[in-house]
Amino acid sequence: MVLSPTVDRPIRVARAAVFTVFALNGFLLAMWVVHIPVITDRTGVSKSMLGMFILLMSGAGIAGMRLAGPLADRFGSRTLVGTAACIASVAVVGPGLATGPFTLAVALSCFGFGNGALDVSMNTQAVLVERAYRRPIMAAFHALFSGGGLLGSLLGAATLRAGWDVRVTLVLAAASCVALTLTLVPRLLREARHSAEAAAHPGLATVHATDRDDTPSHHDSTAHDSASSRHDVMPIGPDAAPPPDQPGRDRMTGDHGRKVFALAAIAFALLLAEGVAADWSALQLREHLGADAATAALAFGAFSATMTIGRFGADRVSHVFGRVAVVRYGSLIAAAGLAVIVVSPWIPLTLLGWTMAGLGLAGGIPQIFTAAGNLGSTRAATDMSRVFSIGYLGLLAGPTVIGWLTAVMSLTTAMVVPMVAILLCCRYANVVATPRAQ
Image (cartoon, rainbow, N blue to C red; front, side, top):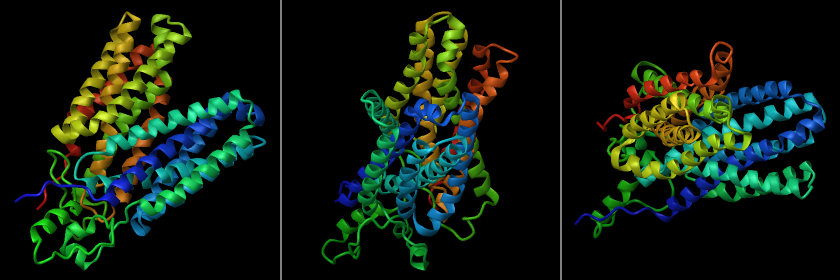
């Protein structure tokens, strides 16, 4: 008799904890963003100087990402999630306490570093939970990040309307997030140490979510086999499970290195398009079709709304059709949306194009992170940090490249660049497929 797979309670608790960590990250970022006007007024920072400081914060974030990968592999993602979340929570107070350009630059560097480390460590933890669930759930984690950002924006706006001092708001937010982090960390999953026993039994090398004895009883070996299989490396939908760790597969050489680079390139292209949408969608609608400011704002609203909704549904699509299908056909939908935007002569049609772009891009990045965390390497977090940091460069480069191109062509014509990048993702979507178990 084959028992239907169930999920142990500690793993369900871990999933809820990781959901909360993603929401906490989005909340902290929103706490900074919503207070930018107040903070720049207090510190006397101009818009051009603020742009340089944001670039500095992004650079510190990339440094945090690159450092977080090896640290998570060495000490475990659970430990690093707690450390990075506390650093980011405390650091969010810094911009509110800044009194001038120098102190603001230092504060943003610290916040960016903590946020970058948290990005990698929480995604590594999400891969562990997804693997234990044996079905796709990564996209939902990223949807919770957006939800946390929305909550932070609303609370920040409410405190500003109420006349709260920015320092009070940020201190309360930091204290709440540190307290929440301390309650969440014990509920996260802990990686097994790689040992001779783990190499002989790959299922034991995934996660140790409980302290229960997995020795089968003489009277219920069938039930034990079904239960213990839940801790094996997860086959996600039609995509096959990754092979167990093998000697020499944890170094950036050969096929493994090329796979990491390919995933990073796809992440770069998708995040380039996402960055362009975030920074240029409203201006594109206003410049191309003469929309007023309120109507132009609907462009990014349509994009972000369908991206959030799409991430809640992407896991189910991935479970049925596989990661490759999510990236390939999602990229095709997004590219079609950008094509509509380029040729559209009407505001409603342009809004439809941004809606398609958001929906198409929604599921791609979560599938890439899942693939990066399941390459069969003993340094999964390091692989993810490489993919994440290179992809993040795309998020920064996209808006900058479009800005440069507007000197020689219209903003709408420049949208062809992210469209071509996304089409390349469609062409090479098979890089997110996981090698079949040997």
